[in-house]
Image (spheres, rainbow, N blue to C red):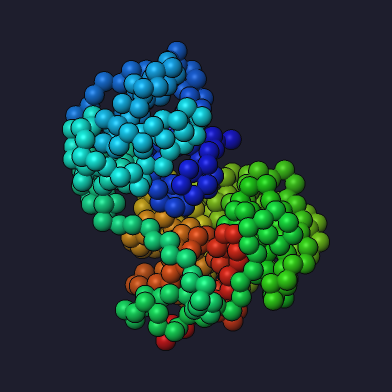
Length: 436
């Protein structure tokens, strides 16, 4: 199992990627990985936090500075650690003290919004440049060559994740940038339910949503929570557990009320009404799942795409799909259109790759989206991508149609009427969006 820790900015559970500083795929923030997590990964070394020499590379200077802070904390030299943090990030005494104390407690640190004061830092760079570097640091670490440095720094320095909450005085509208206006009246909120809590009908971190042919709505917390079932009006009906589950990567529902769960054990089907476990598809690290109009099940793994029947018997296994699409980190979510074309999200680029029904790689659609979470396709072939605070609506060939702003958007599903269901933690939202 991968090492997990909570994002200090948005509390999302993150998989440790092996770097001192990494980017949260949910809120877009850059965070210092908790010392305990990093230390366990380096447990084979005699000294997991050795002294790091200064580097002329500003990106590596940040990581080296963090390692020096960790080493000083482990040696009980708190004042020196605070000084090192200030020099590394160019922040004030109060910010550095708060960050070091969080690291002392074994917590992660959100460095995305640190206010700099123009002080000297180990990289020898300006405070104005520091924010751009912090936001770009993880993407740059992932680049295979130095030639990717400039465009990625520019992208991250000029982009931001907006998380504007829906105004309580306008419960029927979500702000939209479609047609060049902030609110154009084309988006109507039909239903909203859930809310933060641990009781029936409440969520703490729901990121998946699905609706079946009867109108029943399903959603579940990412880790440890049961699948909760609601009627078409959002009233709580029941809930059931997924045995042996540690996290839910994705959720989908068939017209007949069968619910499919992609989790750490593979893909399993359940009776949506009773929670009775039905069938299992063994696949390593499933990341996305979708049910086509003909009832076939599409599953994206790290490197492959599998098509199964409703009983989860494998029909096709495109086990070289990631290689064919030149997807170096594999796939995330998956969706299928009415013609059987398969679309899958790839990270860290946030692009969509498209395959024919027989698994032939067709094209890569560059979205320019920083933190894509899920993908769905309507009956007209339009593509809907959630991006934490935005729904991006594209044509089938990737041309932008509209963007819709909301808050904490993750999972998405679309029913036969074209109504849109969103896992907007800790709630479920149902929308109608007019694209005309």
